[in-house]
Image (cartoon, rainbow, N blue to C red; front, side, top):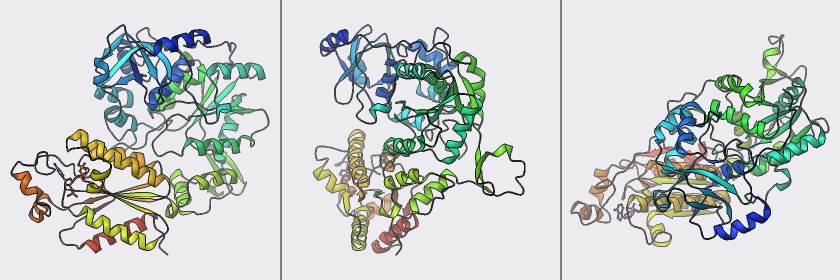
Amino acid sequence: MAIENLAPIPELYVSYESAQKMKAEAANLTSWDLTERQICDLELLMNGGFFPLKGFLTEEDYDGVVETMRTADGKLWPIPVTLDVSEKFAETVELGQDIALRDQEGVILATMTVTDKWTPDKAREAEKVFGANDEAHPAVYYLHHRAGPVYLGGPVTGIQQPVHYDFRARRDTPNELRAYFRKVGWRRVVAFQTRNPLHRAHQELTFRAAREAQANLLIHPVVGMTKPGDVDHFTRVRCYEAVLDKYPASTTHLSLLNLAMRMAGPREAVWHGIIRRNHGCTHMIVGRDHAGPGKNSAGEDFYGPYDAQDLFREHQAEIGIEMVDFKHMVYIQERAQYEPADEIEDRDTVTILNISGTELRRRLQEGLEIPEWFSFPEVVKELRRTRPPRSRQGFTVFFTGFSGSGKSTIANALMVKLMEMGGRPVTLLDGDIVRKNLSSELGFSKEHRDLNIRRIGYVASEITKNGGIAICAPIAPYAATRRAVREEIEQFGAFVEVHVATSIEECERRDRKGLYKLAREGKIKEFTGISDPYDVPQDPELRLETESVDVDNCAHQVILKLESMGLIAGE
Ligand code: PPS
């Protein structure tokens, strides 16, 4: 299926002159500050990456997309692209009104005419689009905890592209890529979608895929939003650049895609196909468990390993792009080369080598050798620069438990022990200290407690990012907020949740600050454990039973846990 027509694809931008005029006028409009995900979506809407969409989905389009993967006029579109907003903002907007869409610095990127406003059934969206209303799925979690409760829909008029300061020369709009393919005469182009660094097996498989399809290769990694915990895109792009010259000259192009992935497996594969078609590609590699989100809350895979390939195959003619299925490549020691696992005839007499993603992470974390047959030295060097061994990375110990459970005392003891060991700076963010310094204006409503914990999480994530140790000791009664903080911190280092499991009866008996008595008398409202809820951590890294164990021993248990996780070297 060669691309006969690399004609430009429709964009939603107005001309430069109109944009200047619109920008001045739009300054008076009600404006919405876009979230990180919405900025990614808007960029692809405006530059034609999401063609045929002309704006954020209307309610009718949304219903069709959720239920049948089709917009109201029957076009294939598998993923809801929605402008989710707060109730407060939604109340200020009337149907038919134009609003300005701004980036996080306040720059107006586009305007939108609001034709639809509705409260979606998020549980249905989760079931239909992601396969289950299970918060272990990152997009389902996002839907329930980060996306706003009201959706706005309507056509978008593009004023300017979102600004990127990084790797500008490597970012291409669909039309820039189409023009490039025209210029160099590439008529068949196979796209490789990725959110991971490339190792030798990937280089082999992409090279083979291109050869089989008699096509050139586009390495098209996602640099917008990927799965929480992935290697950051700065590191990955340096890795991709290192791999580029391993391909025969002028056969391969690297271009960065500012997509916000949803990890929606089969539906996501179809979406990726449409996006690559829009970028002028004729083929796309679809792997085993393409865009899979990992395990669900019952420990099982969300999707079958070949569901994505099946759904893609079903729709490939309509998408207008051909699937090249991913070959699982393994290394044959005796022949010193990679071969597709299903084509090895003498498998009983040769040595087959492979390193899983988990094993690779372990080796990086522990500073162990990564053999040259597995990856390129330049790639390994980049990964090591970003991720020093765990014993030199920052991390956060997050104590949670009732007031008076002993969190602060244990946290203090732990801090002293860690300082005695030396090596990394240690900061204690104790509940009371934080409330004096960072959160002095806050009370104990759910909203204020969440804000308080988010602030602690933010400071801890900065400390962790910069190689320090943050010890936090708030009550942090809500599981969802603790999880959000975990996600924020795990981008940079380990998050060690320690549940100080002293029972409410024991805390009340101790009543060290006399607060429980006041709470019982109704003189302190919303008191955790008495008149306010506490979600017991289901799966903390460590649970401390304090009733029969002294403080020193509790702190020691934390140290042992940190050692077993490789966070402190056991010299
Ligand atoms: S939270 O829920 O995580 O934001 O709470 P935190 O910042 O850790 O603050 C808890 C300390 O505030 C005192 N205090 C209360 N705790 C719970 N509920 C109510 N209503 C309340 N009012 C005041 C109490 O001393 C807590 O300190 P610790 O150190 O936990 O005993």
